[in-house]
Image (cartoon, rainbow, N blue to C red; front, top):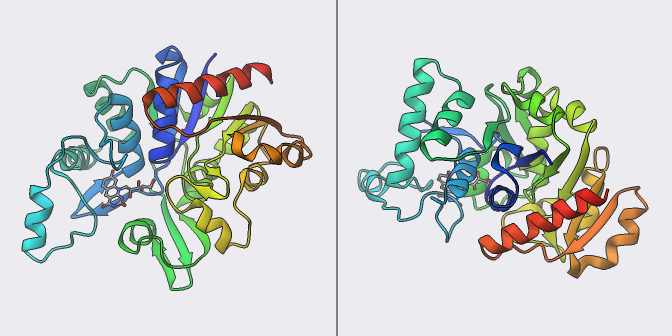
Length: 308
Ligand code: FO1
């Protein structure tokens, strides 16, 4: 079964790793959010693309989920000594990725070409494609004004109250080469357990992606369990936008494309409410404590897809 997974940061990367360990690698494509990308110290940083790649390659920092394992922080701590910005933690190993990515972008290579080459170097055998090679930047609209995504997420610890989102550059963005072809030739599209507002919505908002996805079986995995997100601000965002965070909220969020949704057994009471929307349901343990947990969830999701 050929699968295309749409993924954001840590939760998406973990689930993608579960798929990577479960299905033949040539049958897997991961399309990654680039709305979180930004320029820092003049370097092109693509946090979600890197989180997915590091995780698939087994190079990820197991504590944070982002950045590299066995990291050292010499560069950023010396920037701090000099009075430079140190709010965004760039590790020494991770820095090499941004340096080399920036060098290649300056030579005229696209983000998707560079990502393909990095995957080869890291011996990743499935396709990882950034959603677009165009410049798209997520802006979080808050009660303190519009904040670039990483300013909101890292610098302000997601504290400002969210009133909406803007994906700057989205209207003229084009899907990266291969994105539409991979979606159309897949047996199912999986929306990974990533933040719907700032990880999955930007991908679906790239012109052409949503219509392509709509022609396929689409299954999402709820990142909300018992009203809380395991990681990140998804639940806080729903609340601030006046929506009770739950698997039902996720189902409603994507109801225009969903065939089915997988959510945690602890929320099994939501089944009838979601099924009323005409969306198939499956409950299981959706917590990915370790890599065997990621693979277990992937197997459960694939089993559900097979039954749809
Ligand atoms: N997240 C943080 O909370 N603090 C950081 O200092 C930070 C640095 C960082 C460096 C490289 C990278 O690839 C990711 C990094 N992240 C950091 C995570 C990142 O901001 C988020 O995971 C995503 O953008 C949200 O999906």
